[in-house]
Length: 76
Image 1 (cartoon, rainbow, N blue to C red):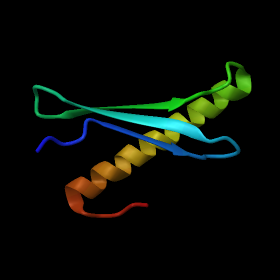
Image 2: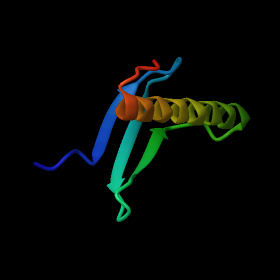
Image 3: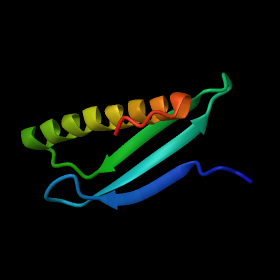
């Protein structure tokens, strides 16, 4: 059985619903590369600020997931 390499879902981090795509790629080193794409942001200063804030949020999410996978501790 092959594990999923792409997850897609919609969620609402605020006032607008966004599409989120999470791509998983196995690396030769045995590690996994994770790429998260959240669509669509306004191309203006508030949109850029919101996108950067979400980037911090996804970084925290992945860090918590890693902690759970390594130790079983739920940080969220």
